[in-house]
Image 1 (cartoon, rainbow over the protein chains, first blue to last red):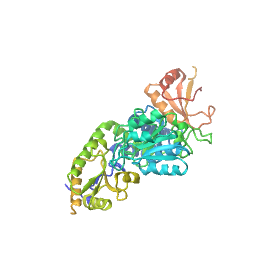
Image 2 (cartoon, chains in turn green, cyan):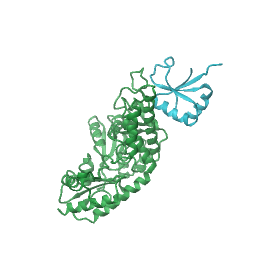
Image 3 (tube, rainbow over the protein chains, first blue to last red):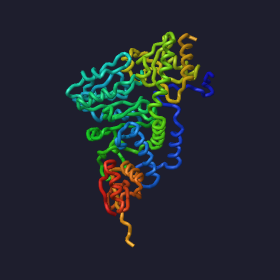
Image 4 (cartoon, each protein chain N blue to C red):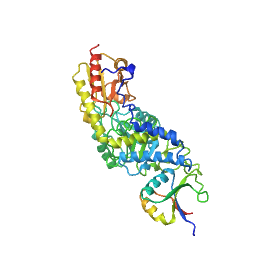
Length: 391
Length: 74
């Protein structure tokens, strides 16, 4: 049956921005905190304060299990991946340092780097192929004696192209500098193991494939790095209150001010959902949906698809263009006529669009999620076909 | 009857205390999370209190997983 937007029968294909719907447990966990706990974690010893602290600890522990790092206290919570990336980049890099990145990065990496450039940090942006792939050899060639950091997205938010993280981590490890990975698009959607991939800093968002609410995210920091990583904010942590100096230990060093306990309660439920379903099962479902959509698009006329042709080499993100319609017009039509919700434009990643040749037109981006199904893909393909035909 | 003697484990912050709590709870050690006694430290946080007889069991469970800063006899 055709979805009727007026009856709220929508097809949500904007999961690369924020996943929706969320598992039932997420709202339950947030409601439970709100109704039964409500206290400030780490700010007192009363039972509601301790229960709030226990909720946050459980969320940390679930994330540590997901990322394969034994110590949950190596994860600092932030409001999103952008804040986590800002802590990593602004905290590590100083004038005279050299940093390597790719030409597929989101502005959450590019903007802090361009700011640091004005302070004397040298930046090498390694060009990726037209389908968005970063070559480890090219990264190797960009290394200098002053290289302090490689910062790379695990998968592009524009094309879904997955980068060879383990291989890149190996190169970084051999040369003795640091490796920061932007996992905004992949945490929960692809397997991530910080030790096996030699990741030193892992920035993740909670509201995408980890099924948490907006306003949640975090930064994994390998042991010892916090000694050289300046915090972005300082303030009350509930610890070492007799001192006016910021604590120097994890996670307090990076967690000043009252945290988003209600959001982290929801994130914990989301991560436990991912652990229960299994990242492989989630990946398999999303890859299947992406493959079905890519095959369908290939049979349509007047459509250009970007990124790697194989679903196995990308996350469940597909950027495409319809020759006869601009991305913004197409997205409006898809919403109003077909109830399909997606995202047009540059997706906060101008560098990536330059790489794939879609700057400044942009693309239409479909971001599939674990709760989408084959019928929705088929319906969307029919809708795109009619838009391409000018119907 | 002699009064029960307690040992408190002090940690860098509440995140560590609650992680330690989770570990010793799973080991079946009897414990209580209490505010750090003022005479021990001016820190406004919480610490783990266990019976003196169980301090060895608690320390063994935490070894290598959560580092404590001090153990103080109450």
